Picture 1 (cartoon, rainbow, N blue to C red):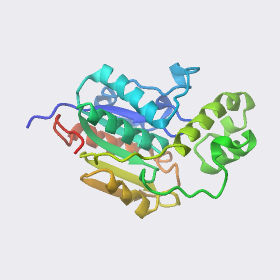
Picture 2: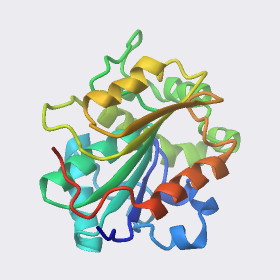
Picture 3: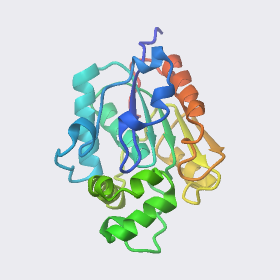
Picture 4: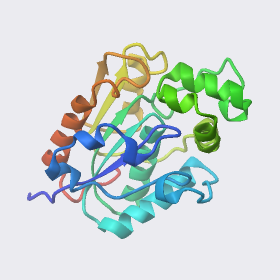
Length: 247
């Protein structure tokens, strides 16, 4: 069966912007031309836009935006951390509407049904100073941004709301996604143990491949070309025909 070229949707971690993802700049020209121009509320050209009431509501809104942009053309979704959850939920929504999903490249996130370890108050309810220290610990925010109060005044509301989306997210039962997926985790990220990543198989029928790469939660950042190459491989391969759907 002839396969339609896949479009590509990139989804960032909490507080991140699609435009600033370092692997986006490393995509080949042929793959970069297939990226759907998407941004989340509160950042980039959508700065000041209202935040979504829930992660699932945000996923539904983004699925509608994608459908308006590309119709039923197959879409490959790539997401890191919060972006992985968003990618999964958008793919569910798209499949439910009869749209095509070429596959998922998910990183830095345990499976949706994996129990979250909580030994501290929810991060979205923490004081600003505590939130800044959490960002410093995670390592995904440049030191110069953390040290700039004016910038942090802009960044913290977005980060706080993204943490709210993740921390109030609850998986809802439904059909397993019948799409191929690659799931990546950092070897030094305690939240993405081999079991936590393998548990994506409970919600995705696959084929599913799980890999552990060197590094912590933000393991793709020091070597963005490696992730860009992986994304490019699946974007070009378009591993499922246009009729892929939830099953």
